[in-house]
Image 1 (cartoon, rainbow, N blue to C red):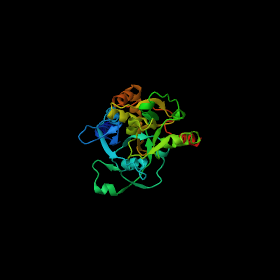
Image 2 (image 1 turned 90 degrees about the vertical axis):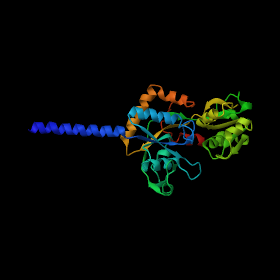
Image 3 (image 1 turned 90 degrees about the horizontal axis):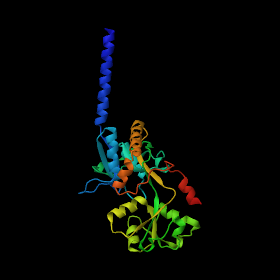
Image 4 (image 1 turned 135 degrees about the horizontal axis):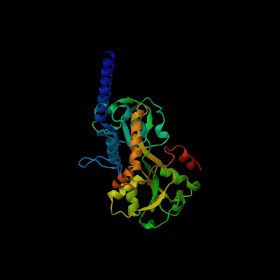
Length: 310
């Protein structure tokens, strides 16, 4: 009798585990993506969702055996915005379990210095959502899946100029966006060697690459992703890639909450499998990205600060 009861109890336990496993498989993998970050992720009315991070999220969800649900959000480009706090608020509010395309830097992964933060504008947000503050958790990164460097882009009059380093921009007319990392790099290079060649533009107001394309400037330094997006939108552009990448850049990956390590472990396994099969590189090229695989350090620390202090 006892043997029968034990066997029966074991059967019930196995059935319960199987039920829980099936339920987990049916649960959607919820990923938050920026709605206007081409060619990584794009969500515009009247057009299908597209971008590298969209197809990568689909591939990971398939690996995990789960349906995919994308939560689109809009990141504000202003002095008061914080990508780290926006991502944390979305995750902590349960809007998603992962935020994709996240720049993996030491500063972006620190324990938040505030207890609450406002949510960014997201698809389906109500008036109350825009007002309330969300108690924050602690962020934890996945393994990186793409490297995002700064690159020099050349205008029509300088498209044949050989660029092997920032110093080769001397004597060229340089356009740069004020207050950006690229601005700090160029303004401090060689104790101000390039200052007289630099014209500053206002981010979000002035069209840097459009001005460069018109011949107003000869060169700029900016995120490779933005150049890829511009080329996709302007197939007849006269801009030319220099092939030079500033030696210190940031990887991009997923970020989730440290309270859910099992999910990040599963995502890392999926990323490793996809990377090993060459799938991630293929998805990048199909999306119009100049795909560069992740580089060490996986999480950018104080390396950039040391460069700027030289």
